[in-house]
Image (tube, rainbow, N blue to C red; front, side, top):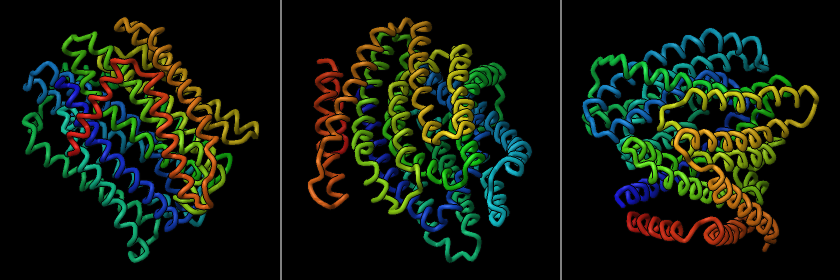
Length: 506
């Protein structure tokens, strides 16, 4: 019951955060697109993408840090938690330096030789690249502090920092025309300044709140080796994920132009905002899954995985269905004019995120075991195949939409593979999960989507039609999922979960 209340409280906090972030982030994308223009917006996405291409190193260690901190807290050994934290800080500083060197050598070579940048914007794009490298170093260095906040499940402060970050990234954008410098460079400097201020806020808060965050140079060789081994295998997953996202983005730039990159940027902005529903729920339940495994409560560990998968997919579907049915209205109301391929790209990325919402508890559960080698090799192979697939599609002159569709198939195959590995590691019973969670969930989604497409326009207003479709679709989806996907005990659990959320909000 205590864990259940904790997840409810954290979910309520993170969802309020997510709603605000989604609104501000989408509005920021609109403002930035209008101020920079389609060409500079596409340039920023592809140049910043080069930096992201190498940031998989940070992603790997970030997951390792959260896992080891949560596991240590589950064993209730504060001295070990401090050793883990200090070792992770040293590791991230080392990683940040390594990442910067890679970006300013291999990344710079890629910038000069492979990217399709208009000649008159080359200088501004180069400045944007260097500024993004510095922002990446700061982002790497702050990871142990954000991981510590999540491990302690202090989601209220995590939400406050996130809200402050997006607000500070939005407000200065309006003053870009007044700064008297290149708009693209000015926008990059704003991102850098905000990243540095938020990192400082994380450090100050952790130092005042959590005793393990008092940093001193502690180099625990065994902890360092375990984290490096764990993150080293996670590196395979990071490489393949970047290959199929930023790698495909680079191929689209090479074979087509920056206008298509702008469409990808819009699709990623929408899917990123929507996936906040999944990410926030994942953030809320992840520490509990890791701690359950650390306490050897395997039954509770399995129950939490299945329930979390169902609720994660259900929450994501409720958001995705009306957006798919009214994608043109969504983009028109958000952006006014938008690049070609933006609607189809957005639908593909939303469906890929929806498939991944099943798997969110699975990758946390597998990470809790610490046995990553075979799992990450399998993820690497499946995910990396999207890149040659996209190259073949573009080489044959087919529509770039097929490139984006590859992510859906890859996510589905990775879901099945994760279930198989979880069964191998913890005797998870995959057949039961795939039928009661995945198959029934997909049938509910297909039925809800088909009915939602039949909802008629009630007037000539795009906004009113979108609101009407959303309301009817949400009510329909909640009824269908509650009756067909959730068991009686899970409906009772969800009812109590919502009750806890409402009490917390009051």
